[in-house]
Length: 379
Ligand SMILES: Nc1nc2c(ncn2[C@@H]2O[C@H](COP(=O)(O)OP(=O)(O)OP(=O)(O)O)[C@@H](O)[C@H]2O)c(=O)[nH]1
Image (cartoon, helix red, strand yellow):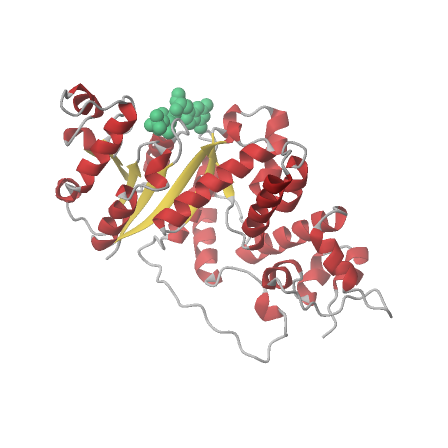
């Protein structure tokens, strides 16, 4: 039986310890066992019960006081983490071997641990050897994300952790309860961001043409491959916490009665574009989870197809309203000379075809008539 782990990471003060204690309380309320391991040798305060604490192995203060080492706080922490990497047997002993256990690892906030130092990667590999399915949970303080250029930095930090750890990663904006109503409204655009318009917003703040081009290329890459998305986290909102937990559970296939199913290859003779609609490959698994949560919450929740459709339609409408969006050019060039219909796109960017031009049948249900006439594809 697999074991499950969340590696709770992110910059200093982003709310990692608070996230862990909130998750423990939330899980207890649903009779679910979740344990926490503190991996921050400099931790001073946290209010969750620990299963294991790295400070039993080594503490930053002791390292800093050592006259032969002469480390400051950051050097001391790196030394502690390297010492930890050489002593994983301590962790193995502390964790024991309980099948099906679910553990949160509250990690230190030094960002270099998730960019270029090998320690966290070594930890992930070790956990995987102990049969853990590991998900990275990258936290960023939402207050530092409400402006385009700050958001782009946050995205890059999250991406850097994703690249360095090579595990499924759920990115979260924390402390949503601290945002003003205006900022809350503003943050919506960062939860489902359009990096191209983000770049436009930002273009006045970047003076150098070279950097403008670089930022544009980076934003384009992130947008084209849907690389980074954030979920909101408000510790006072049980439903929101549940949604975050669902995403994480889904990424590590948590659930004793749920088996991972290989995505089925769709039959060739179905509608040409229908097979390219982008719902998660294991839709039925997601819907099972949604049903479960719906019964726990006592209120009906939409199945994943409905949520997916709504998102696609919203995205399409926002693109259609934004005359500067690069897709406008593509769509205009696809207009038929004879009617309002769109010709079959032969986009170089595969994602545009797949994400923004859903099958005809799906559009007919939801789009207003005016938009619908522009979205039909000629087959
Ligand atoms: N209002 C509010 N405050 C929060 C939330 N999350 C964290 N905080 C506060 O932010 C501060 C830092 O939170 P921590 O949970 O210690 O952050 P951390 O990432 O573990 O910090 P380091 O271990 O130093 O990297 C604390 O004062 C928390 O009370 C939140 O969701 N809402």
